[in-house]
Length: 337
Image (tube, rainbow, N blue to C red; front, side, top):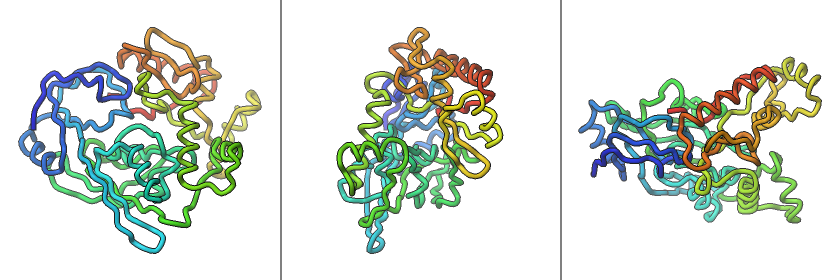
């Protein structure tokens, strides 16, 4: 295992922020991970996977472990279900495409989400009416301090909207090495009602879609709305969609009759953060190399050489403006480092 010093992390985060790590090691197996943790247990350790849900605002004076463990296994559990396990270093979108190629249903709405499999449960990633928790069974982890293995069940992960125990109570305590999903092998339950999926399928004259149809539709929609991190630095949705009370929404609706919304339950309503940001005048605007995407205001972008601090300052400006205009506090979905 080679230790690299003063390693640039520009190619290891989707924002393309050029900060450095004091020390850097690529981890290719669980055995290597346990060994490194044993050797360097007195060091400050930072875990880095796909770098897709973070904003790096400074150099990391740490030993950065880049989790690149590969491998996918499958086992048929019943007439209509299979357990599919993927190692933490697998590219998430590639894994979803593997599942679709093998006719394993359940993850197709999560196509083209950037990042690695290992970081997906931390965020409880979701898109187009589906969340990771819907198919999640368990994940294997290694304790950062002791190097001991621990299996977390779905219940133990405490999944919530864009949140889990790994992002809250146990943040920085465990490293996910493998994730297992329960996926359908036939009689797939398709989710086409969210967003533009249903209309896009109608335009293609697809009446009985397959999981591949759903995936291809989601990919096309995401490409039409969201920038490719390989072209322009970004981390997808920077803010969570806020959930407000029905009473608060009713008051807002008096001033903004056309405000889009999604009913969560009898007491709560979700409002699109992108709409709030666009109405606040930020869509497509740019401050130096830090900016807001011109097609989706929920996405902050690095046009070239913006620093993490510049993007952070822009996000704070957006939060302040939205709060003043709508009385709604935006929460970041991206981890600020």
